[in-house]
Image 1 (cartoon, rainbow, N blue to C red):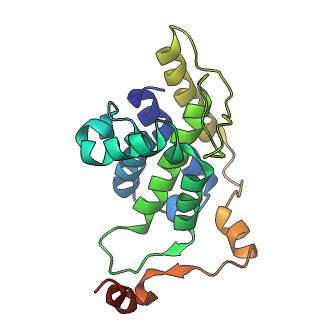
Image 2: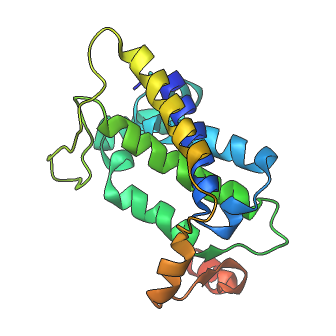
Length: 197
């Protein structure tokens, strides 16, 4: 998928996530926080490709990742997604300069990128480092850009026509799994710093 397609699809996914109220942070979030978060993260998985938008900006990061994992490697896997889902469970201290709704929007952007790349014939290696690729090859051929735009508009239309009473909160499911939330403000940072002295 093109960078434009990822950006459009991520915004459409954010609108859908907001309508479905998948987390309280997304449901009540500030759009001025969430839009930059979702747009940035929608391009982040392609950091493993030196010719991508972020890869050209951050070549010092992109080239080593590309050499180590290749394009559509680790950054397009369930392992990377697990890191993102863990962020949903993270309690960010209120004195941090990064708003929680920004972080949650970044996870939406990252997931939207993976879903969008699954719509291409190349697919993604969800079980990386295994080479098995998962795909639903809807986007192919010369009319691919038009199809990318159509899918983004379709997701927004679906989000708009959804009934308001649908409750699709992931927070309810995560709370039932009995995970302890990670609290960054209570991490023993001083002990970790002593290990590296």
